Amino acid sequence: MERETVRLLPVFVVPLFAPADRPERFAKAAASGADAVILDLEDAVQPDAKVRGRAALTTAFTPLPVLVRINARGTRCHLDDLAAVARLVPAGVILPKAEDPRDLDRVAAALPPSVPIVALVESAAGLAHVRALADHPAVARLAFGSVDFCADLGCAHSREALAVARFEVILASRLAGIGAPLDGVTTALDDAAAAVDDARHARSLGFGGKLAIHPRQIAPIREGFCPDAVEIAWAEKVLAVAGAGAVAVDGTMVDEPVRIRARALLALAAATRPPS
Image (cartoon, rainbow, N blue to C red; front, side, top):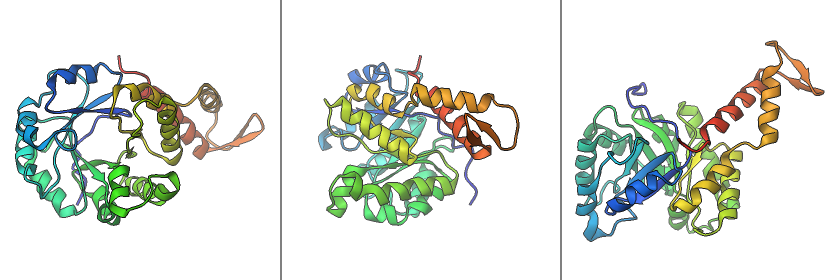
């Protein structure tokens, strides 16, 4: 199937979760410096508050992209969540525990054709089918739920243990021609250095953004993803040299793959500036 080009997802690097049943936090989330807000109907909302969370869904509090994370297929709330999202028509819907491409068919069929899906890979089954998930025409982006993934596999939440999984999520996104995926959360809420370091690691692997669970994490994640002054100066110098073939810049060969890298760095620098 060809990708449904009507399901376009705005570009964002640092989306912030906000509990859907706490509407008093929505505007604060939008003012945090995040470049998208995820209204969460899943983990952040207790079972007895799901109905209240669905009733509070809105996009009116911000011009930023607003996404909704619904409850997984097979849960009691899944169909009601889909109906609420279909009425809201947000910038996108996040499907947790994405595993079976047939589930994506059902979710896409329940949504307006303008609402793309972010498939959240957080299990062994999800990783086993990640290329098919990424290739689904309604999926605009993947996200990696590293904490749930470790719980499913019983492995440590370490870079070494997750290296292969992260690489496969990135590779699947590239093969499908969709945006670079979102990395999972940093669970330490008060450790800015950890958030910066995790974001730098994610960027070095090829992730295009990182999920945030607290406003205090926004600036550190943005810092970790933003190219530094040396990288930006290098990219500008490379692109300032005329010519389409191979040339030397400061004694180093520059050809089209190097220019592609330079353009990507400058685009990332622009994308990681705080939203106005």
